[in-house]
Image (cartoon, rainbow, N blue to C red; front, side, top):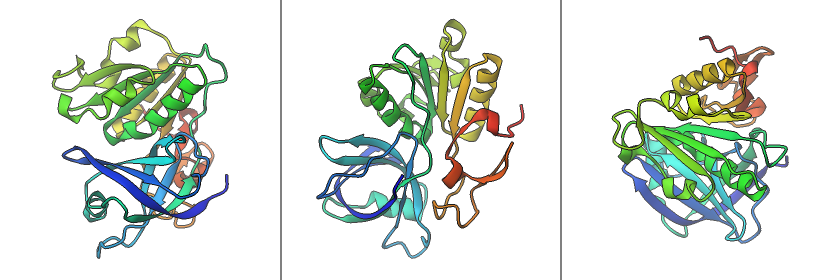
Length: 258
């Protein structure tokens, strides 16, 4: 896909959690086509310690409102600067980057989307695009506590939502791979994004269930174009740049050990 370097306008910045903000961007021209699972490299202005662009998953694309949503975890100087953006500010973005998730080929496919933490971000756009195709997904979302669950009301617009929390404050107590859903139902395909231990556990479940599974890796990505080699992942095909060959990989290509 063609890549664009755009100065997008901040339409809104919403503090949806003490550690997360939702940035809504727009442009005076129609936004480029973007696929679920792709990401954006953002230039962070005004941060003296942030020299490289920051990769942010595409959370949602609202074509009617001409909006791009980015869910940002505020964890360092760069993301703190992003959280301070105001309506009308400009954000320089390189997009869309990477390869996205495999979309269902028929409406009857049963698709499970498993996310944890800020890793839920790309699953919202995937679910929304699936709903447009007439294929309703099941979301399985995990967090430490109920207050750490993100955007549940928005997810519920596009599919069934199942929840786990480590302390049992909402949904079932435990990790996503311990949810009773996985013992009761079978799926044709699983897509997952979140902390690496969670994704490895989902991959183990998928292999045992003989279910196709894709994982969106969150390796450190500085350039987004495969030039800096800082996001290399060992695969069955050798060392590959996650930003260029991924971030979405079929788990059969990954050398993850049980």
